[in-house]
Length: 210
Ligand code: TMP
Image 1 (spheres, rainbow, N blue to C red):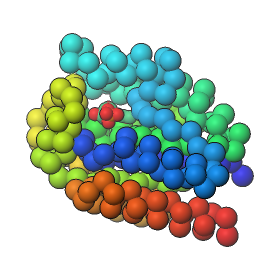
Image 2: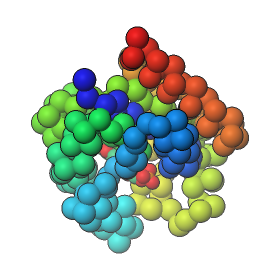
Image 3: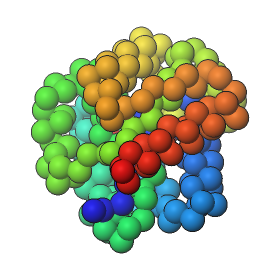
């Protein structure tokens, strides 16, 4: 059996990257080999595409082009980092994956979610996370938090309505797949969320072994 594939999802400012790092440290301390990574990104090519996708100087990117660039980054990431790690017995913890495309390019940009899933299947070879932690946070709070650390990127700079639509889409994804997607309230403090994340992942790992 390949190693577990865990993803973090959610609107902006939910603290995903902090929680990804904390989870990897906690699991590493228990002797589990972990690889942390993020999307778009994770390989040299995907990191170059990330720069283009997030830069505010990238103008006139159609929704279709945006999706295809996300998918090109994902295909490279899956075949060169995620799959080889999982097959090597390394638990992969990834900050965003296919659910972000369904939320951002689907609910956000208005592309057909069924088509997004079909194209993602092609890009990932059908790879699906075993567990997804949805760090849910009210849109205003999340954007305010994100703005404290850096100037808004091309996505963060979108209108509130865009962010409200994608938050709703994430919550619907969680309802549709309760076995895979667990919702955590990321408006709570970092410590509280970190212990809920660890508890959720540990009980998932225990059922997987059983
Ligand atoms: P982040 O890593 O700081 O969250 O930035 C990545 C941005 O890219 C974030 O605004 C969400 C967006 N994104 C998509 O629109 N579609 C995707 O498939 C992924 C992975 C990210």
